[in-house]
Image 1 (cartoon, rainbow, N blue to C red):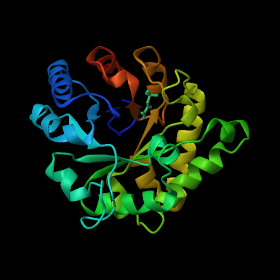
Image 2: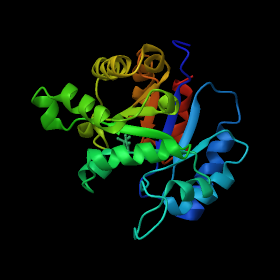
Image 3: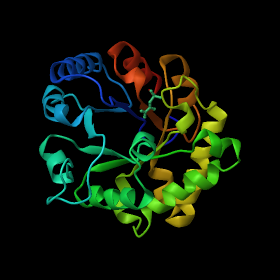
Image 4: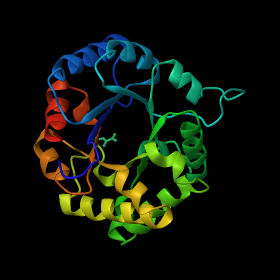
Amino acid sequence: MKTNRRPFVAGNWKLHMTLAESAALARKLKAGLARPHEAEVGVAPVATSLHVVSQALEGSGIVVAAQNMHWEDRGAYTGEISAPLLLDAGASHVILGHSERRHVFGEQDEGIRKKLAAALGHGLVPILCVGEQLSDREGGRTTDVVLGQLDAAVDGLEAEPLQTLVIAYEPVWAIGTGRTASPADAQEVHAQIRARLATRFDGRLAESLRILYGGSVKPANAAELLARPDVDGALVGGASLEADTFLPIVEAAG
Ligand code: PEP
């Protein structure tokens, strides 16, 4: 093992699969991961499937994540789901600030900051996504954008409540496009994120937090990405929708 950080491979199922299909895939993953494996594994089904998936995965050690949440617990917020309700449905983790939330649904840094604080306050493990668009990368703004999103999300928080935080670096131009950041490019940004956590909080927290890479991770490219010292796992979209493509990525993580 390259560090003390346990690798984490999470599948983002996005807006795919019915209740029956989600439960069937969960059962396949449970069976496929019955052998010992080093990585922590998670899946993020659509909200309506959280409960059946968490039931199907009981006893497997596979964790269940929501794909989004609202920062308020209850009230006049039509269409929203709160942290207590996600916990009630069986989720232990929540993806926050996914690029599709930011760029398709217009989520802003301030809302993501409130969601992060609320998730931590309720004991949900946040998977905070950060990442630049192609125009940012081509314009030399990758570091500014990624670290700016990170800074905005953790603004006002101390190191102590952040112990569980998981960060996912997901270059927007690599999500669902078949284009992947090179392992060297991913490593460079992951190292910058870790360095920023060390200066903003402390070195111990920075060394302990897991930074996942996301963006067209497939069985064919997973091992090379995961071998980089600051790449602690993967957030996987398309390839997480079939056990045959997701399980080899988990295996590549150890
Ligand atoms: C994602 O949805 O977070 C993702 C990385 O998708 P894909 O693997 O399909 O690029």
